[in-house]
Length: 292
Image (cartoon, rainbow, N blue to C red; front, side):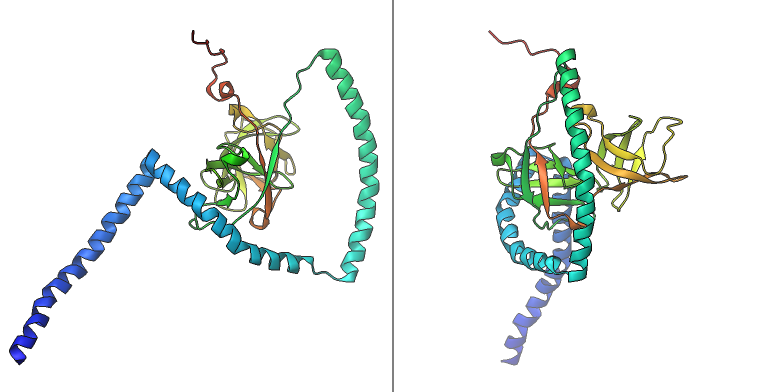
C-alpha cells in the first residue's frame, strides 16, 4: 500500500517542476506580446483600449465622488481671520477690476470701430465643455487623466484642455463618453508657443516634472524671466493666445517655464470644443473639388 501511495506523488513532481519552469516563460511572452501590440498602435488594439476606458470612466467617476466631497469639505474650512483678510483683499481687487472694466469697455468700442473700418474677419467664438477630472489608473511615468465626456459631448482628439488659468493639456483619445488628456508636463508633450510680448516662436516641451522647457528658440531671442508664454496656433492643432506659463529660469541648461496652474490640484477643466480646419494642419489650402 505504501508503495502505491507514493507513486502518484512521485509522478506529480516532474509536472509541478515543468509547470514552475513554464509559467515565467509564458508570462514574459504575454508581456512582450502586449507591448508589441501597444507600440504598433493597431486599430483593433486602440479600439479595445478606448472601449475599456469608456466602460471604466463611469465607475471611476462614481468611486471618486465621495472622496471629492470630503476633499471639498476640508477645503471649505477656514478661520474668521482668514475670511476677514480675504474680504479686504477682494474689496481692493474689486476696485481695481472696476477701473479695468471701464478701460476694457472703451477699448472694446474702439476695437469694434476699427474692425468695421478695416473689414476684419473675426475669429470664430470658442465653445467650452466643462468636466470634472476623474482618477486614472495610468502608470507613474504617464502624465494624463480621464474626463467623463466624449464624442457624444462634441469632444474630439486634439481639443485643448484648460483650467481656470490656462492650458494644461490636450485630448489624445476620445471615446463616446470618455476622453484621455495628455498633460503639458508629459515627456511626449510638444506645443508650438510664442512669447506674448515679443511674438518669438518656440516649442514648449514637457519633462515629466513641474517645469516645462522652451526648445528651438531663435538665436538672440532676448528672453527675460517673467515673460508670459502662450500658444502660437501654428499647425492648427490649438487656438492661438492661450496662456500656459511664465519664464522662471534662464541658464546653461535652457529656458524653463512654470505653468500657470498647479496641475496636480486641478478638479474641473474646460475642453475647447471647436473644429479645426484640416488645411491648417496639412498646409493644403486648395478647396476640395466636388465630385460630379
